[in-house]
Image (cartoon, rainbow over all chains, first blue to last red; front, side, top):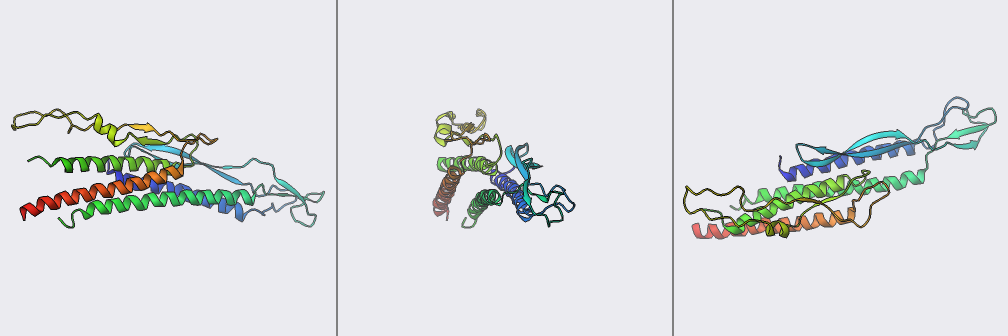
Length: 139
Length: 125
């Protein structure tokens, strides 16, 4: 088994990676909050969802986190009346993405917070390793 | 010559602290994992209480029973106030507090090691 403090760095790294994938998914959702289809009656952009899974790393003996799935939200699309839109159907209705920007922003704040927590863990274990190495300095 | 007891204890303490750090890091990394149960290490005092008293070996031919007299700390599920709808019981604020505790106590243990070492060196130099 490797040094526990280095294992800590690896775990925090897996957390940082998972949260950054989550931030990517959120940014894709926000960027496409107004993306309609390009043919009449076509489906617009579908909101993506992300879920995590904890995976026990046998060599570390600790639970790393990984992205389990990036799925599609099956909530219904919002429908707007906009006859001039290229994606409008015969009756003039356009299907808009099922992205709620407020929800995405709240999710982004949470991802941010968890990312910062993982960063703090990584900083701390690096600092503790440094302290141990510094024991040799004044020997 | 065997190591001074203080140094042994400080080494055991840093071992326990770094093992706890791994569990805290695992909890924080899995703060958004559905169904994840937060874990913590048995308190250090409990580990010390369950330690066996080891026999002193005064002759090289003496055999010492396995281990250095300290017991292994067990991983326990931490009792967190609430579990979210997704079955996750990580309380991130609590974990950050624990992280601060580990930092402080680790600094204390390494400083004790340094001071004891300085005391030994002051006799030798």
